[in-house]
Amino acid sequence: MKSSVLEDIQRIQDFLGCQTPQAWLDAAVQNIEILLIDHAHCERKAASSALHLLYRYPDKERLLVPLARLAREELKHFEQVLSIMRAKGYVFVGLKGSRYAHGLLQHASTAEPARLVDTLIVSAFIEARSCERFYALSNQLRDAELTEYYRFLLRSEARHFQDYLQLAEHYGQQDLTDRLNYFRHYEKQLIEQSDVEFRFHSGVPSG
Image 1 (cartoon, rainbow, N blue to C red):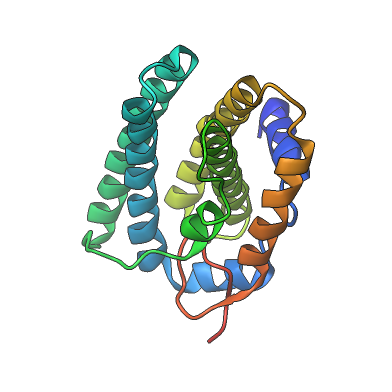
Image 2: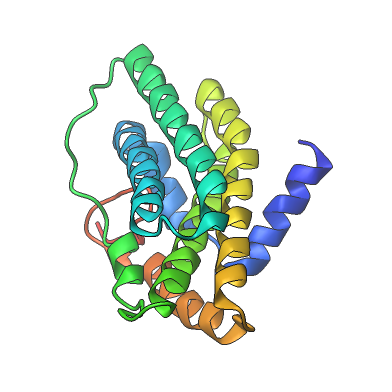
């Protein structure tokens, strides 16, 4: 793996409050179909979230190009995951999402401009966690095709994390250390607490 990718992973691991628990990785190995279905949903939702920000904040010029590019990439990843699923005989179906994204967004401010900054911070955490899990999965899965694909995704997900974080810093117009620590605390809780259902962003499986 290229050293620049390893540098990206180290930066992301330093940014997050914890690494993915081994129990989640063990569950992922045993639930590849659910992992891929929910991963596809996550890519679709990521594109939708980027587009939502574009429509909600049309006057924020700094957002436009990075989020338009991000949305295109997420939709391309959605197509790629669907292709992998079809090759394995899996069917894309509706799936109840994890509490992860909502669990972070419920702590966001409801007043502007703090709402925008908090949403960008939450998006940075989501992208960072996705990247961290792709890396962890690539070292755990016995499926060579999926391992190669998740390693391929590392670079773009790391860039998405950086894009959201840089936008938050731009529109925050102040030191975001306290706000990042605030969300880092809740993100760590969501990752380390138990979850009944296994999902791409779920916590430690309880069953």
